[in-house]
Image 1: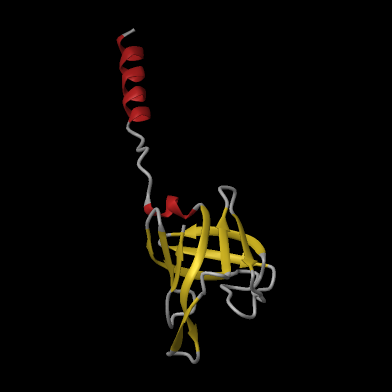
Image 2 (image 1 turned 30 degrees about the vertical axis):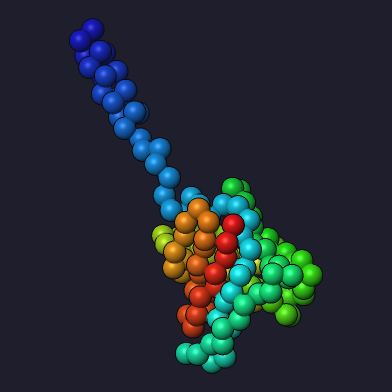
Length: 135
């Protein structure tokens, strides 16, 4: 009987020790609006672009691993993040891998997450500048 009580006690301690703390990447789920970005002009340079408040580019990361990009009062050619519409994403460490319809690679694109808070997401998808999103 003592062995059963001991085993149940150890199992209870281990079950309760699981952390319910959210990691910063848990903040990724939701809809983000692109506010500014550095449009690549070469392999090492970029041009700063601010998206006007009258136009919007939205990216959404679903709990189920879905990714969508949508536009309001603009077209993908004017202000865009990927310009692809929808796809899937996975978290890989401190990066997010997005696989969208227009990408030529089946492996998608791995994008470093520079920073993420409840209100701001900063990505560096092309290595030459940051894309800044707000919630």
